[in-house]
Image (cartoon, rainbow, N blue to C red; front, side, top):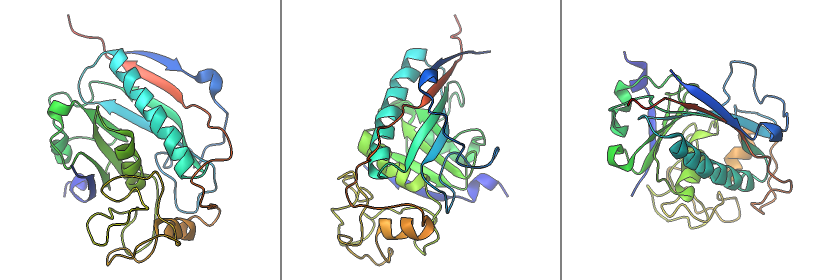
Length: 253
């Protein structure tokens, strides 16, 4: 059986040269997992702060400037992630390359070798779903994979990170689930269709739905007992920028 077909899908609706940025700002945090272990999400029971490393690949050969612009998007998403997790999860390193899956479209994920990828970026013209962005559980480097268009919005990024960065044990699934699939609408959670506000629902404001027995933060704290929750949705400590590594495939004349 093709292992990439044994996945759970979560989607949002509606020769090379290298260079580094931000190396001087590396805070030297200890790795969040053992060498070779999962580094693209927080393994169950992790102690904060969890520092992620993400391998990001553009499907096509793109200019270095396009990769740098997307890095800016990821840095903005990282700032939001740091706040939403109240200073407990951040991206520490981004490895960004191009020309990973030339000629592909985003819906081709079952036919692509994603074993070295955490995130693959397609142009809007080549992004044909599922949804406006998606996460696969059971694919990618460590069983978490995100497919996005290069014009993804920050709120959509945060919604998809909710599907990607946790390892949960509730009956709803191994990650935070889409809350827009069932009524009532939970306006206090970015897992709803509006992807706003930038907060996950908590015990004081979660609206119970048939497929979700309790709030997002209730389950996060059950599986990550060392995580704290103050209901402020802000981080007390400033965010260290991630180290950026670019691998740029030369254009063919």
